[in-house]
Image: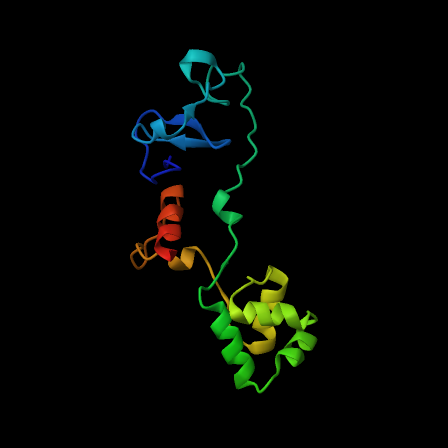
Length: 166
């Protein structure tokens, strides 16, 4: 089992904690980041399906959804310049680009000035129309991984990625 905060392999006891309404499995070192949750089975700490927990039938567990599966790609920092440069390279006016993407001219102008971050639907239309890439995955920004190494992204990795982007 892997700590869902720092990513370390948990040897021995794992701790079920709540951090901002999210239940996580944590190692001894990270258990202080949240409040420990009482596990089913009382003080023995027996998990569902373990001998002695809820009788003899193993409990069926729904697979937990991974927080990182829900994280969408992020808009690149220089999206405004990329859009404007690509539009000008195709000799389009902002009115023409607005018509091709089905949006208002004022929206295109604000996006090109960096005053407004485009919504996902507009990003896809702009990428398709201008043949540019305006998003990057959070995993793409994870520079700490070695070639051929496979590991699960943790909350700590996400925090590092967010800090690096500032």
